[in-house]
Length: 196
Image 1: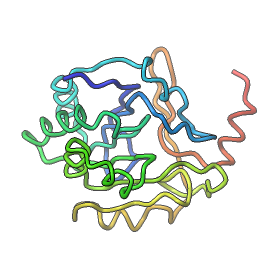
Image 2 (image 1 turned 60 degrees about the horizontal axis):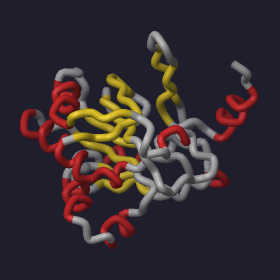
Image 3 (image 1 turned 90 degrees about the vertical axis):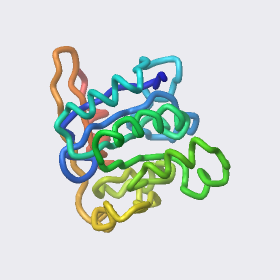
């Protein structure tokens, strides 16, 4: 099965506890003003990955858990469920998913694949990004977003969301530098002033 993604990064620490394998999916219909990732909106961009190959890459990464963001992960609930099921057949890795939808909006869709993906998710960070409510706190974009522990695995971590200052980490590759994490509004404003 194919998953349309924007990118991946191993050994991420800014998107949840431990060392995480981050997957950014491609495609988002919400298009929140001030979004840090507008390059993930267009479903025609990005690239396809086979879910079985991506699952093997995650399993071989040495990471403790998986964080999925985007874009909007629940637009590709079937493919993500397939990939996570493949991972969990071999190793019980914790899963955090960021979504622009609320949990209530997701459940109201009565989708078999959305329900399947929610069942594979340990911690859901839900809600649209609201630029005016970016309070610069950790692991969330704006204060309206919730960290919902859907299993017992990340209950302690859910209580930590929004309690400390936000931070980001940089990953340097041959052709790009990837910023990972959720920057504060002040950091975003400073970045807009930088001319590369």
